[in-house]
Image 1 (tube, rainbow, N blue to C red):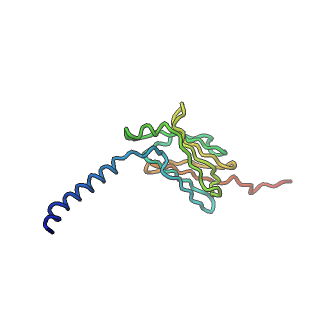
Image 2: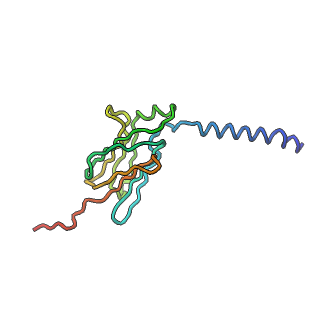
Length: 154
């Protein structure tokens, strides 16, 4: 009886697991562009890491350095045919209300006539820099508060 298990059931089990693994790996991104948004607070600045489910190229952003709204234009690098439809959808992420970046919402806009955009909304005017992630699957937005240090009311 043990011989039957080893010769028949073990190869069937291996084949079944291989089929399941292949099926799982071939799945599309399930309609989501943004995989996660992480906020890391430092002493002088806060970093917002936005991770995508496929590679994107950062093209440009506006306003250049300061604002309550930051609009970033993106171009997808490689998207599977199953995932192309997700590119043209909208999705949003609302962070914790008391985050150190003072970020109120992140919206992916795939339904814009002028291209694909990621828009970050802040609760106040913020100073920021935008950087492409080395893996082309992320962006880093470095946020520094617009301070009032050095100003006096005379």
